[in-house]
Image (cartoon, rainbow, N blue to C red; front, side, top):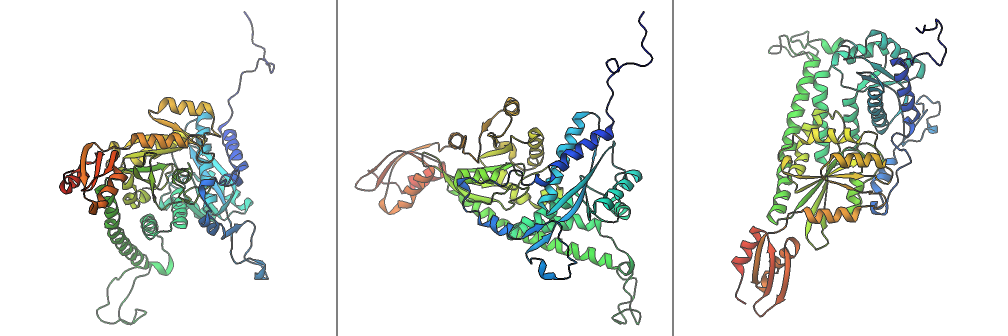
Length: 509
């Protein structure tokens, strides 16, 4: 019988399990090692399809710089178009144990770092904790919150960003401990949307989402909790008719926010007829539509530029473009269709934004073909696909739209990852919007999958109805076109509505 030695040698010592604290520390270290390049790793590289990118030049004109103090004796040292970067500390929680849970936490924390940098901040440090569920009081627990406070003090940060959604009480309790501003993931995404929205409808949608988020998080103290009073006590001396308990300042703020939300909802609803008119016009003329959807920064705008030469803003940043863009395109055989670029998605997309942008997302549900763009070079492309489909599932009519998964950035993606995704998804195509790889194949796929006219015609259209001939060229398929004495003879296929119009005006050859 072999006896185990009292002091085992290193060769016989069993493998030890690494403490969760070491795993969390390694994750934070890897995120911080790339924090400075999470938003612009390798720079924003443009292809010939992206155009002059004048909008990007305008956006980058308002530069943010690090280590810029506003307490200089001579203010002329500060360029007036420079803004100081906020210095932030990231905080994340994850459940489970082992390397798989740590990898998932790393992907989420790296995305949070990219969001923070897109909003205009500099990531200094991070704290990652493993626990089954957030602490109801301080989100982290009292001990970890004190540790976070020391990290903030040492690093000189002025903001803490939480990778999750905080309850109002948790945010207040954590701010009382760390003594700096605390924002959660939802507030960070809303801030980015507010920076990048440009259209009137987009700004209204973002403002509505921000107010819905702010309403339950109003806090008051001091004079804001005092009530209005009548008679000689009131500051305005309103006298009779104004006596009573009155409203506190915070109640007044809540009422004003609700009034503003009501007004914004009316404005957004008033914009709906304009969108519906454009859609009905396309439907009346039987113009097929293709929608581009996908995770933020997956390359949707780059793909739109590669397919149509639209010149839409392209930047290696999260939520670089928010306002939907619709462009006209043509198949190789001359059929016209529209290509719509929609807002990007992200994990745990705030429900306020989903509700506010629901009118915009309707474009996807009414499309004939959905191009689901996926960043094949991302560490977790399957997670991106699941996040996008989670949001799309609530859009009416989406189950009737044919979906094609477009694996973008295949020129820098891992072939094994690409093969794994293609094995799981029914319909996929490989492209690189930057190099142009696979773009011709994608155009052919669009041409093959778009609905084709199914009503055969053999008519002679009078010469004074050239508008109908033009519509047949745009939306139909012509096998024969010849000019006869009484008009233009057309032999081919069109949609049912156009066929009825043609038969109504047709003359005998």
